[in-house]
Image (cartoon, rainbow, N blue to C red; front, top):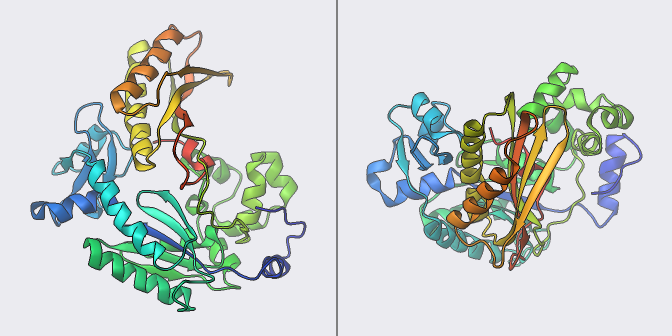
Length: 378
């Protein structure tokens, strides 16, 4: 992204066009991907609430079908909570080999239309179709064709967002889910963004939205009313992103080959924790969630890092580098648990725990880790 010196929305969009013309960007997001694959492969699951993940007391939901989401079940939720919300919930074990195979089919479809494909994970990607291979010309039409081709090849549905930058395309793909299409045309971006609740902004988690609410910010329009200095004072470096996002500005190109540096996640607690048993249970839940992200991104790395933030806001990190890349969950979990045991007993209660795999190898066609990968897990 670039710095924008003026808050004038029209001149910002004109400036974007001047730097090589408006792009045509599509964001494709499969609908409840893991759960939909399970329902496709087992007709008995169709129309029923399904969760992919562990059903044990320490298990975590990796994905939930739309039937389950109606009860409030969502990814990264403890399985016991999901079961309480939906007593009839059916749990399926993850089958990442199958998900990767289907993802490969989907990516092959993308490549028929443009070489500029930036996968975000197994189930979503950005496409730049400014110069599409088939000369169709209309990004909206290309998105419609891609969705139809995905349905024919996989019997699954995908939602798509079409716009002139990545930020808006991603917002649009979530607008009419499931099996939907949304188009944000040039000149419409700022108004669209400002009508949204801030929780819809990529990178704004529950804690961030709570902080904004206390500052009187509920919508994109509220953010757009704040200048860059005010946002920087309250949100640090994230304030610059918020300033541009509230105006629908994003000049990042679609990159078909970007090296991801790490995969991880962290949890901020509503109440500080200190007891060893509670710490171990929390770590096990984070292991489940982060390993699902590692699998989803096909990442392999040698360094496992545990992050602890104490209730006095001091941050402590402990890392363990292994002789070979982590290639299974048992190996990853063992390294993480050793790091926690080495830190016990903790000198103070903690308000946050995080876990990251870094030193990644052989991951070239994916994105760099974004701030969203480190947001609250629950």
